Image (cartoon, rainbow, N blue to C red; front, side, top):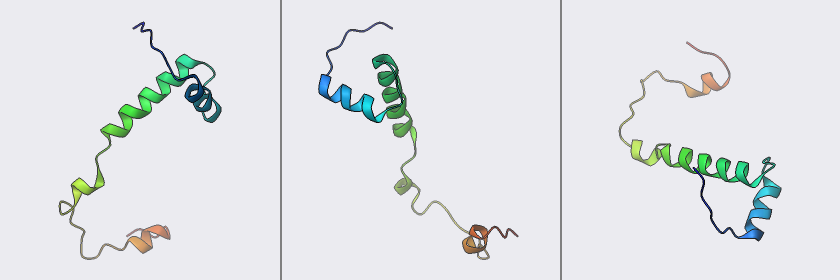
Length: 68
């Protein structure tokens, strides 16, 4: 979709400096993709009280690489 918009040139230059994007189009595309992905992620606070762990669950052994 072709769209004409006015962008803050300073903000655009700063974003390009921090980004791996080579063009303005690529930068905007990446920003929109990241925006959508971040809003799709479930807020972990919404899971409070909805997850139950087994009594023998040992996260420390999993961190060491020892799985049951």
